Length: 288
Image (cartoon, rainbow, N blue to C red):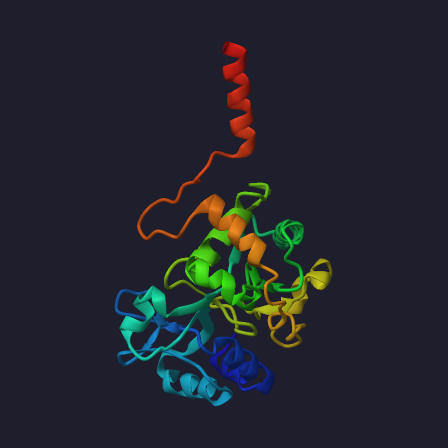
């Protein structure tokens, strides 16, 4: 896709609106076509010493114009919503995170998008069994997909007891452990302090597709041509809708099982899986 077509895409009012409204309160990153002195694609996350932010539609165009020499292509934003974003300290301070979204990152290992879709449906089924159905959405990110819970699905009561980052991390991990591995796809928990994910209606950083969103009831209908930049199919209400408190029970269950996010340490289960505990108990009884 030429630079002119990239600019044309981001000139669309709906595209600017979706990126701006989703990014509000989040730390933004912009992936550029031009490469740095090491030969790596540029990822811009700061404006001077301030974290990069987008609050309105005009900000999207302003970022495009200000970074035009580097040819910005894809917009990302954190899973976290922050109280303030004025300095580097604000994004390093966990207490500055007011809400955070569990996100499941689904990547194809063999290029078959249908397998990615199947795994997304499996995750949605697990979430529905856990009581979360109205506050979750699907997003095709370009080569893979994300399933994401709206951060407003968790009540102030739960967030007063469990840190928002711990909610996002533990819920994501809890569900990852409950989906079948393999099948030509990889499901990962990438939640950390500063991770960013593609915003709705952003272009992918390298393939000519748009990040389109859909509610759970539409996911089975998804086809790859929904992500065509020239004629995309996107459900703007899907990432906005939520039911306050819908995720509370899952958050408490997940945190009890998985525990908190810990920087620099491989997280382990607090308890063994129930089926393993049962087998070990039976073996001990047999030995007795």
